[in-house]
Amino acid sequence: MTKNITIHDLAKELGLDSSTISRALSDSPRVGSKTKERVLEKAKELGYQRNLMASNLRTNKTMTIGVVVPHISRHFFSEAIDGIEQVVASKKYRVVISQSRDDFENEKEIVNGLFMNRVDGLLISPSMETPNGDHLDLFYKNKIPVVLFDRYFDNGGLSKVIFEDNKGAYDLTQHLIDNGCKRIYHLAGDLNSQIYMQRFAGYKEALKENNLDFEETFVKESNLYKEDAEEFIVDLLKDKNNFPDAIICANDVSALAIMKYLDENTDIKVPEDIAIAGFSNEPASAIIKPGLTTIDQHPFRIGKTAADMLLKFIDDKENAFNASNTIVVKSELIIRGSSKKNK
Image (cartoon, rainbow, N blue to C red; front, side, top):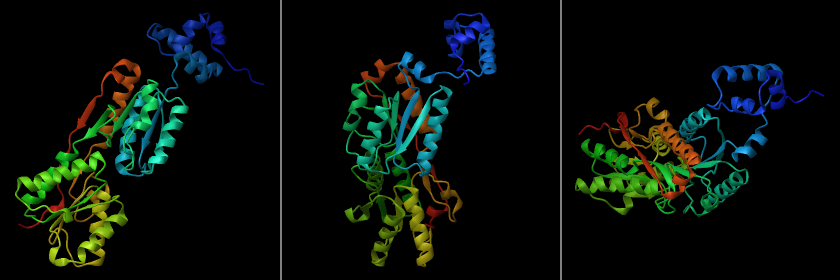
């Protein structure tokens, strides 16, 4: 049987104290660069492998961070995860990624599992069904930092990195109005969710400021899947006398689905007959013809910012629980052919 090389073996080989070896392997500033180099070379030569479990017990850290998102396959969340991983990897942390599939019960199970596995912190974008942050109390009570990103709750006092949802929707609506649209409909997400509530509010605010009519029938709540968008446009097509001249969708998935349905099943042209706008700047939005006007949410930046905040809280837990912190990432209007109507 091959012997496991220990810190004590390295110390004996190099004629150093075991404490010096331990500090060198941990990249401590208390050990000079030449000594570190000697220790690392000898560790590699002898095949030393660090006992992470023992190390974690000494530091009371597992060097893991939990990340929970609604859907890993969505461009926004995959980009946000990329930003998160870039930050935490530079600090030698690992991430455990889970998806709730927008199911609150599933999210609760995931959160409990991450807690039982002793993650050092949690980054979470809650499901559409999640009513509040009560299920995160076990982290708060045990002084494990939590940062919300993208989706959030107004209650709970949790720190968060969020997006200018209200302004993004306002800018989209104002852009459509500036391009001659007057009868603007909105395919919304769940209006119990803060982000979709804010997008709806921005849309409604722009209509009001431009003295345009708003009716409850102009707005439809949905899960924003392809099937929801198709059902929405099919219903609108039943009454062509009251057909909108523009639709703002609360995500690009639904906007692209509407454009595809109109192209394949009707003679209605985008943007000549109806302007379409989305939200999130999915990669496909720039590829289709006409390109989709949308809002860039900068998901990579949101992920990096949220990870930076969480790591600071892990290193300084007092500030993590003294007060909630909120960082707002600016929106960016991306204008493409789907909204450029002739006035």
